Image 1 (cartoon, one colour):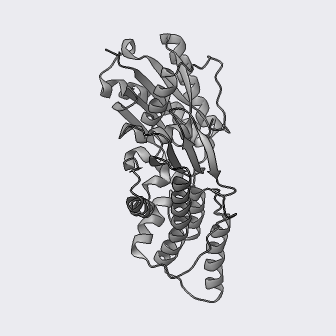
Image 2 (cartoon, one colour; image 1 turned 90 degrees about the horizontal axis):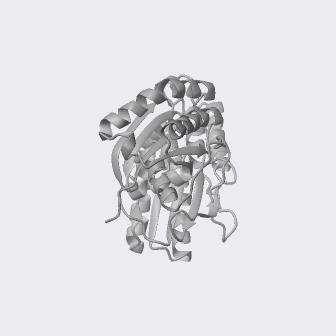
Image 3 (cartoon, helix red, strand yellow; image 1 turned 30 degrees about the horizontal axis):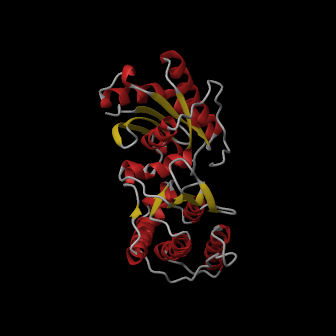
Length: 336
């Protein structure tokens, strides 16, 4: 009988300090997250220096709570997985150095994990993967389509050429004077509004799976400015609904086309914007018509957490991948 693999995961890439304990890459024994949203809200976005300081303050408490909740001991931990990038370098360093110190002190193997790989593997905490699969990653800094033929193998087939979807959401939210984080606020308003404005869709080249949301963002901003100059008042709900309709149209259409072109057995959605109700509904409708299985993680696993890092780290660990104690934080790290 195969021995259970228990991995400790650490995630500090942005504004959540998180530690988790996961068994066999599928079962969450503990997933503790300390959010910094309230600290950054008054600035309208994440302040890197403040984020780093909060991580330093919280990492020990979160680690202790993860052990308490999982009712486990260091003797049962097989390895330590930590986000090495991409992300805010100062924030990443807190988690990386904590993981290296623990790996050295407890003589445990260390595995560096790509943050986006973590978001992808958040789905495996709910259901086993079937290959080949297509992953749509939508978060604050990433909008990508990734093809996977097997565990731990990532082929980037489409990416954003400018603003990611999450960035566009936050910038439009600021124009509408909505509180940080802006994505959930726009999603909430969009449910109350109507698509009264036809904003552009950036389809790019005919066969491209890439994305572009900078022009859409600019169009929304110009529409708001022009209305103000004319003394007109546009309903925030309608702006939100019209903006979101454009984003969802492009994301859904390109994901459906890629799924057909590569004949995948499964489509998964990952990243913070995967919590967007409008996007979830549109994707669920489209793939139900195609009869292609669609996985979207529950809301608590869409945003940054350490269970997803432990889940991705389990695959790397079982494939024999190890990181040296010279492991460093990498603000820009390609997904390979």
